[in-house]
Length: 290
Image 1 (cartoon, helix red, strand yellow):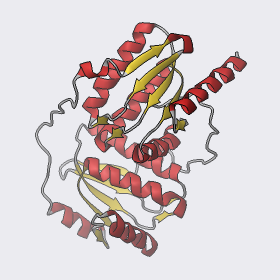
Image 2 (tube, helix red, strand yellow; image 1 turned 45 degrees about the vertical axis):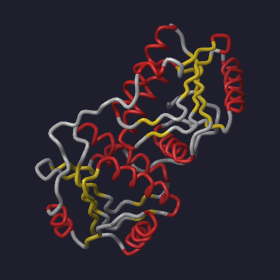
Image 3 (cartoon, helix red, strand yellow; image 1 turned 60 degrees about the vertical axis):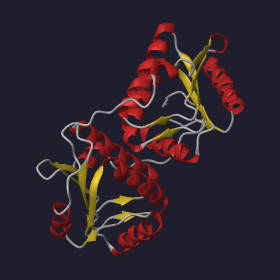
Image 4 (tube, helix red, strand yellow; image 1 turned 120 degrees about the vertical axis):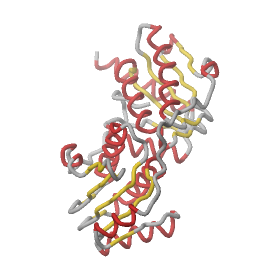
């Protein structure tokens, strides 16, 4: 879930890229089923730049209505600073797992090439690096398409299983959501879960502090775009503030990366008691503002 009302200190990092800048660097070639991404002459100096770039790539893919694309990536004169490299590697791997039928890269500088080759050695992927666009394209044309005429996403759970996962504590103004040991496999799961939560919250006719248990939760790459969008919408309409606790290391990393670019503070705590205490502090801060 994402939210606007938080207590943790805001990041002082600022993005150097606008949405218009990023959109101009993402081109879809429908006939070849290719998404071309240009990092040419870009310096990715911090994780915020990286996260905003990848957020927009995911949004543009979602807008096409097609899940799978061949990736053609231009690295001409690209610089990825040390501070940005972890986010760049992590988001790139997630994007490839969720949406790539094959990826090729071309025209990388020596420094960027070494970074990618090093990642290839540690993260078990083929960098498919070429010196020019034509060679990279030729390689993509050799790869088979994995698209199907229509992919039907089947739900991964029974809706009745969610009755116990949403609980309201009126005296504390808290709605508890239990994502424990749940895996969001794709967008269908996200919409089914959030439709259920939203209907329960709407029936109360009021706003709540959200307290979310992320113990053992997994948000798979194909689910992230819908998950972020539905969580943000729910928080904007019904949340007085949100706190998360006990996420797994991978989920926590994903939440923190996306929080930076999507304008919310993650408010992650280790235990229920710590999360509950933060909500008490939120209430006190909100009361002081009235």
